[in-house]
Image (cartoon, one colour):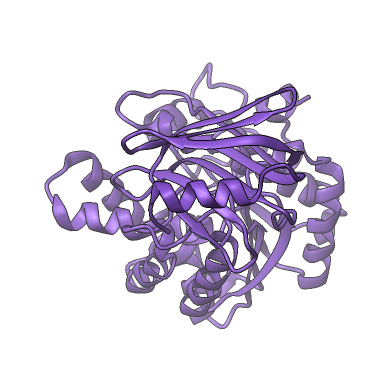
Length: 258
Length: 117
């Protein structure tokens, strides 16, 4: 239930505020629903590997092929037309590293928000019904920076919402971008996943997404003292944090959609 | 892709003129500019698989290069192009890349539609 952490907290603070560790052994199945190849590794790769290690089936339902990305490798080895297949292969490799099965929704990159959300949510719900996961990970609608992230975050929330109460997995939402602003709006993330045992595989999966991460790794190697890069790296590899999102909570993003 | 060879690109543009071609035109700052130090909103636009016919197509500039396609009722224009390739499907791809290898602009023409997801 909605329990604002402080008086006057914004109405998007709908998650359970009590911090609890993510317990992989307690899971029955993990379904990650995000729009691009590499979103899974950046946001929850360590947690996916933890579940796989615990014998929990892990599935990544990926919205698009990331075919409109602008990162082409450093130096560039992909182009606009080859990027789709390259990213599909990179995703297969990353999922193999993380112990996950990859499935595709096949939407057009950058265009998720222009689809009928109910139609896509029906497809996501069918996958949830088939796999019966205990947890779904998705982006927090409105707190995910990229328009595709917000749009598929809402679609995943609608899919979970549409299931009968007894068949509903818990929904863990990922907020990205300005952490200070997110904390001001949402409070502290309630579910913390310690990824120290799987961080090496998270890094290996990041490297598998070569077209998208090569420039980042080059920057890390070139300037280990760059404060902003260091902060990002520490956050990326330090642990994964999720908001427990009430599927019935209507976010500002949902209220304001067309 | 290879650094643009103006003569080679000009020959490829000439080869495709006066016939309907599918166009992919794009420019992008990337979706994450708001997270950068300048906190700028992203600026992105693309058109994919619009059909056009050009009577005249020219590549100019010292590099980065510009391309203009003169249509019967309008123009197609791109600046900042650095690299090109002709794919196995005989698509002419022109793109601009920044020093990190990120695509900044693309202009592509092909007799066949470009692949959809």
